[in-house]
Length: 586
Image (cartoon, rainbow, N blue to C red; front, side):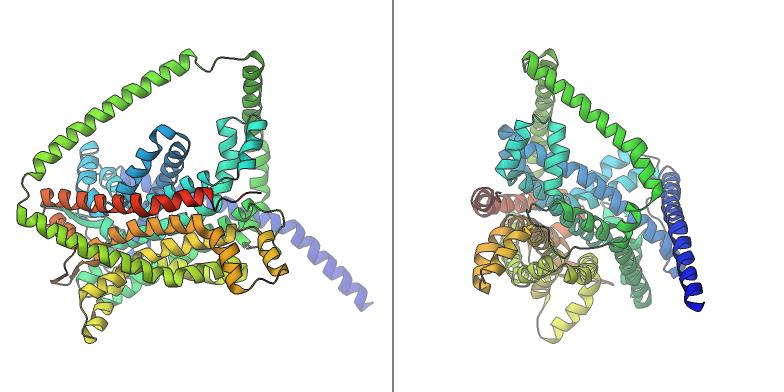
């Protein structure tokens, strides 16, 4: 009798769980959607209120939740803008041969320009667009964060498009895919893994530069926004160690929650886009992704809204392609002629604006004296050495560690949140401790700046290597196991060729990031003292702080020219090698 009662109890409990669990899933999803809607209303009300350029920052822990909320919104709005820009820019650069070289050179220049060099122009432009609203200041800070997040994503998408296997492109051509079908069914899926991991390091870079982007001077004016970066900078300036600990703990909590609620589900979802013939035995899992996939609310919304709309869109595209191919329509139509004329007009206006800006810049550079020019070239040489030393030291540990994480999903589940925390941690908060330790060893800021550059840029290499290792097909790994490859054979025939395109992307963006990080690595303010060393980054920081715009402009131009020259002589040939010799084919 007792076993029968136990069986009935077990059956009834499973039935209750089966009936109530989907309800709780739907309730959780609905609560998340409502919370997101309320957050949008809250942000809109604050942004469209009256402008307050210099907000008072309270060091009480009670204000940390709202500060953390504002900072998180700024970082992810900047990330969404970065994602849209990266896909659009990378797509045009990859498929338009006429402008490809120019666009990649422009990308090289933009990624090498420090955040502080964008600061005066961006803030003045946004303040003039919205002179009496808070949204002008907020958009200025968001665009500054954008300049620290976007470039590695654009390089990643461009590199992925250039390395798509030839047979996949041929399959799209045979099936007469339109440009939109090719984008959503081939190009975005193929580039997803690289974009996801570069998105993570981009957001981490946003956290790294948060203290610079939320509290800064522009000439004689000071701007201070409510946020976690302003809180940490205020606490550091006042020597409030307790407040700094509260702020750092809050940042770590946000990073962990972001990893579990956002990045881990996206990584688990993106695993299906690996280009392989044999499915891996171990996959990355996510409870949040399981929750979303089993939600009746989202399932109903997908079946009733998104699936019919996408099906109708693809049907219309297919019918239009059929009519065009069957009737042999001319590729030159009045619409295409009008679009060509519009592009020529826009290009003409853009060229005229560039020529005018260049003329004004030349007039501004006439104010720079000869001794200042020599000092800038000397600083550029010293910073060049520091950048390359930091890249070498970072590569020595990120490549083997990144491969180990990418090859082992269980290890990735453990180390990914730790890497996210370490990459997002504001290295400037550790810098006082680092300087104290170096001073006891008899070393100064010259060595400390290399360490700070590493803290800000090594993650570009690590996350790209992880993405490359995860993208290596499982059948290639199994072949190496089957033929009992030695460690050296595995590295030379499978690992290094497989991660090579991702590694080059990581090194290019890390190089630009190291130049960018020099503005905080070579010029550091601690309480009432300013620590500085010889370098181009220190000269840019000093010029921005004192409103010396001619020197700021010339230093930025020198930094951009050096980065572009290195990319032309070193990184561009390696990119071409990745597109040809190390391109994955089926």
